[in-house]
Image (cartoon, rainbow, N blue to C red; front, side):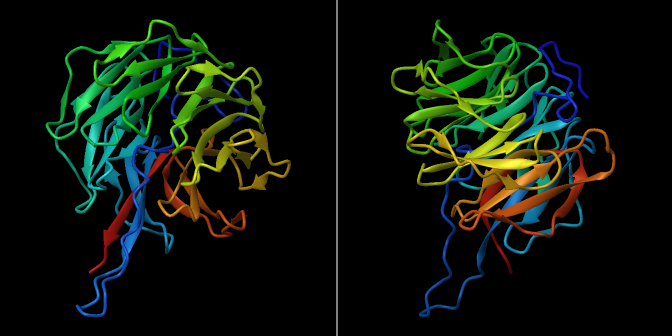
Length: 357
């Protein structure tokens, strides 16, 4: 595990509290492109591809979500990769390498990594991309800052943005105006004006050890998984106010994702080997959780909202290969066949499609 200056919790399951990601809005909200019409030769089907950061092996695995087939060759990246995001155009994957203090970029079509990684702050964990695809925000757990990267130029802004102690996750609003950042040391959420790169001076108190933060696709509410209190906090995006009552979840809530219509949130409970579902409008959890197997950590939904992709990470068994499971969203049933990936799979993101042939 990479050394960090922010607080880290040691539990039976979750030995780290920095790399739970999910992608949410950063790169999985583009519709799948349909087959071509009959007037021209049919185009190859466009398929969604999952990119999985393997913390233990320093690689990224790629999976055809429809078939469940993993590419035989994983992609080497930096040391201890954690967070993954895909640009909205589906062309580029960004990977936060926590021990290297860098961000790697991967060309989706060719599956090749750029030879030069981008140096950011200390202990980068989660990376998110603005809806226009121009800027990536990176939470630096070790330096209590957020770095911003010009995606096209692959250059970092020389001045990082100070936030609370132990920043963990970052998410953008759908309008691209505001970044939300969780800080575990201060149990708060910071908000940053994307255009001016300035942090609001007043942070928002949430639960214990806030981890993943995502903004619902409708842009109204930010959700925060509190690892230390097994709860979910919700924040009104417009007023920056937290609902007084948090939502009780399973043990060690980690990664989560929304259905595209903003109606349901799926939450991976790392300590109870389940997924919880939350009605976003009423803020109520379904009393029946979905059993998904050992140590669910990060998750994302495919762009069509039909499939949830979940990484399973057990730090006690590294460097044994980890697994990824898939869940049918409509029926809430898990595919019985898990997919082997690299060692210690953490973050996962879905590129909207790739063309076969």
